[in-house]
Image 1 (cartoon, rainbow, N blue to C red):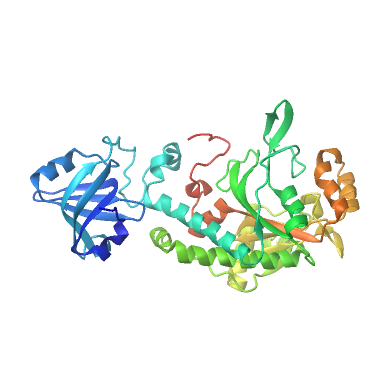
Image 2 (image 1 turned 135 degrees about the vertical axis):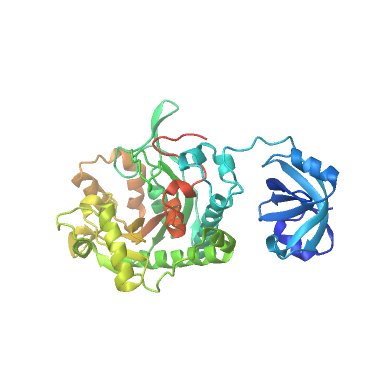
Length: 428
């Protein structure tokens, strides 16, 4: 008899079926016992009346893996309106050691630190696993949208010879006696691949050795990177980003509807045209001094409130960040060289995406590095490629965990990360 999932029970009314999963909860009443079995799809209620089977159920512990064979009958009060009766129950392993929290409760009562210490079992809770289902659907939407626009998925090295952002916040390692670093981003490689495919994207881990201990930062996170050639300027990149976000949100609604219901979340609407303000205007809106070189979290929150109030949008582009705060490969605004053809996208008052137009002429790279006092040698393999002809291009990167956290309303990005790596955590 082939195993079926809990959600398939209504299609087998009156039939004998085989379920398998974890003991989610047992309710032992005087005349009957209820065994709630959890599988990847949801919950199934098993009604136990036979004394021998009841005795067996009483000896089980929560999270023990079991197989149940029984008959499907209707019960409007049971999950999906059906339950399994006259069962036989067979453990598929030894009795489980119960975790240090009750997974059958609607919300995990343990603190986040305890949940993360016991992530392999905490992630079994429907709320925690629902967030990961949303994450999976978001990545699926990202890929599908870009595939439909002629992009090619690439896979680039995560061990590199020099830092990408010209900064010191990198994880150093020994590469057969030579210094190397974990990649801060696939930036250099995705630009070079524009010279091959014109339009590329990557889904992969990136590493930031920044000693942040906040609810929005991780030392390792998943970056959704995009780069496209033959752009007029950064606005072409913003257009692709808007379409990509719309595809991600639509796929989450389509493929993770059950997870959204579990989380009590509705997905936001991505406007046909996301409102945009220049950095200088953003400072005014946020009430920040005009000399500020960047937006602080408080400024981002104020801008998010303004975008929702004035435009009814959860999303806001801030364009034209000062060149001094952008990496050396950023293309300046030809009309205002102190500002960049770059942008950030704020989602509900938090920076979600950084992107923009890149330099594409070899001479401009040499000048940009010289202006910042950076030697060319560490970047030679990257910069030399621009001697061989590269089109005007640009791109962006979305932090997956941060996107999901904002989407589902999580207070901490670690709530939507399976095994977070940060300033303090390297296990499990």
